[in-house]
Image 1 (cartoon, rainbow over the protein chains, first blue to last red):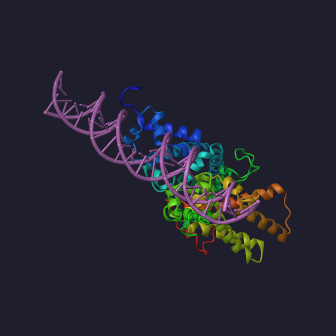
Image 2: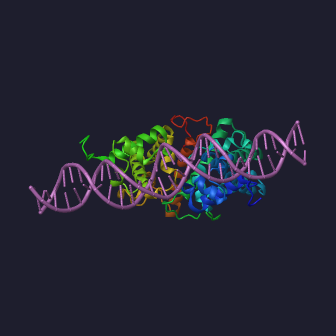
Image 3: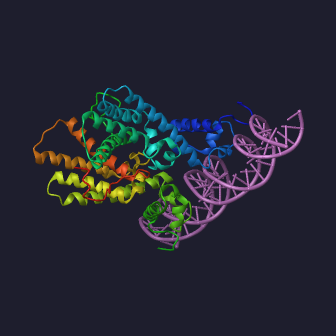
Length: 191
Length: 191
DNA sequence: TAATCCATGTTGACAATGTAAAGATTGAGG
DNA sequence: CCTCAATCTTTACATTGTCAACATGGATTA
């Protein structure tokens, strides 16, 4: 099925090719035609799987988000307490985007997490990393026997996410000279 | 000079037209040719003032950043203490980007603050809002008579900026349902 | 089995866009 | 008045997203 008229699994191949191009030369240089060429397929072939370039990009975002979530869940899985898990999430958040700053721009650059959020029904209402944080936070409250009104909980959650996300943002900014190695677990900025 | 061969002040007119287009229909729809048309000028005229589309965009970013800085400095100017000034900066940061979420994406979306940072020599090393924060923070330490090693100071600064910037980021995310009104001064998330 | 259908790909076309090259226009300074 | 350099226009070309018409072939069904 490699050289037949029908590709076999073009949809995923297009997504993979897109990720490859973004990694190699950034999102701006990603064009539908290049992606198609990378898959040895005519320039209009993607339209059998995606209504537009944007839809392909949203699919790629979902893929990258899945990859991000895998790392977050792995970081959380082996922690004894929810408190440790939350801190591990923050470190993983920073490490992930320090390793691939382009992904930060790609995922949050246009700030519209709506589209690729809604194409994956598992996401329900919350953005997956936020949903995981919320889950861990509730576990944390239980473990500590803390009771808080809902509004205060939301404020806590936003503060945590804002801090970590803001640091990731700074870490990914080209042109910001920072003396920190965000990958270094000894850099205890978070606690 | 309105209808003569030479425009008179095309450079600034192009920048203004660019801002107008971004406000009306977003950055994606900004094209050099539209900007030129908006100024009643041929499509290649911008190349007399900017080497590329990117250079025009960087100039626009500088303009928007100047506008942002004006609000930050205004917020700081009438505060009695540095502590109040810093809090006011945070509120202004949130208010500014809550009012125009598109500016957040535009300024930080590509995460490369290097280019339009370096075209304005006044910026020196730091990104202007960060430079102002740094200045206020030093004043704060003086007023309180606090002495800290340089590294701890940097950590404090990054934490403050990360928190505020992260909240702005969340506030600007389309698709994140939030019960907060980031413009409401009663929402005391920051303190 | 053979006919049919539809998802999947191809080809060709078009408009919008960024950009370069060559030339026109004009105000400022010698 | 003349020249020159900055500014603007025209023309041209490659890239890109998208659409429409058509080709292919595996699966479904008569």
